[in-house]
Length: 569
Image 1 (cartoon, helix red, strand yellow):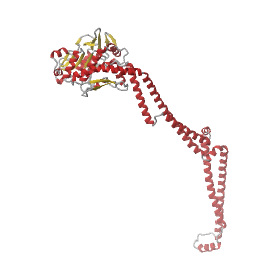
Image 2 (tube, rainbow, N blue to C red):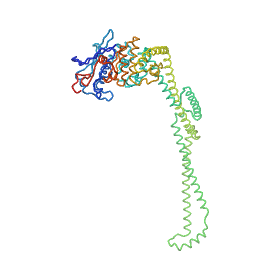
Image 3 (cartoon, helix red, strand yellow):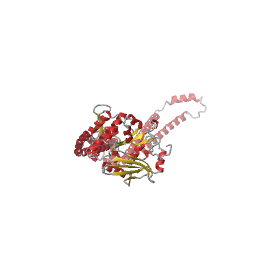
Image 4 (cartoon, one colour):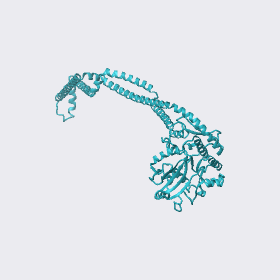
């Protein structure tokens, strides 16, 4: 399928603004403006119209700078106010089709007059251009190999032409489809399976590093040791008290222990106070029987009596008073002792009652077993937690292994497809590289080859240089690749677009551009390229050839939307 024509028109009135006819061979979209005005006249916009007609994701790129986001308001208003549309006709030897896209927001997509959603439009194009009814790869994924509107990379990075993150599986299905290497669905599935397996292995390793465990059998052995240790602890617990009894009476045991401790402490306090009182009674009684020398005391009393005229008592009265004080003290001490003895009897009786009703638990309390029981119970609970953690680790590691095993089985089940892929890759690359290397030699003297990797984990294709020169450093390599692919597809009679659309080629040397144009002309390959007029001059192409190959020449006075745009746009 080749490009026939591109028509810009008003969708409501059918007023035609511009029509451009494509030719076999080279088609120059020429920028004839002053060098200070390059990229201002719309040569990239013209290629963008082709892209939109071929189902581009967005139409806004016609008037929104994709890098800066700046909106060309004048062009946007023109498109929306006048309801502009683009029609691209495509044809082969027997068929011709009309592809129409309305450029304004929510505009329609139609093929041969049939309105479609954008998704259905793209799927229909996949059938028209590639006879790819399965839509795997999608049309927009495939068309990028033929429609290089923005080539931002000079090296063989152009092989990764889909904007945004794209998996190797998608590219494997694309290049497998383009080069007849395996079934596109199988290639994609194999790549996705391998990618999934790689992700499982990475996740498994990270988990193993985090848990410091990589073998579920080792984890199971460690868990078994933990369980054995727990059995020993449980045996010790059972020796102290039946666990069920302890759990059912935990509150009662705690209360008994608290009450018993309080009674023991109270008994100790009472006995201490009683001991002190008894000592005081004994001391007081002893002092009362040891009477002092009253004669000596009387003599001393007589000596000081004259110095204390306020002293009215006699010596005998003082002696009697002292005896009464001693007797009163003894009476107080004896009463206090009786009170303490009574309290002690009550405390001991309470202990006996507590012991009688809770003898089993008090035996544990008295032997200090409750503290030991609680400590053992905490150790058992800690081991339970470790066992639970180890079981989770074991389960996760086992799941990783099982998932990896199943993926290996699915990959192995496709071993026949993989072997066929290897054979087909050798054949396809040998055939393609005959064209690729020869085309590149003619353009710039280099000798690149395309390599197809059957390792489904890798990006499928890459370029090597047989002579170790600067392969891939210029956009001429892209042209050599695309021209070679057209020759490859023609020889295999593949149903693919029979055209190449390239964005600006300012970085291609003039001599290289001349060779590219000659090859496209000789091989009758439809090659549409946007180029500066001065670049054509440096290529030293024949003026007559340039004139014949130029399908549109844009300038400040002849822009893409001319004459629709007002003066000064």
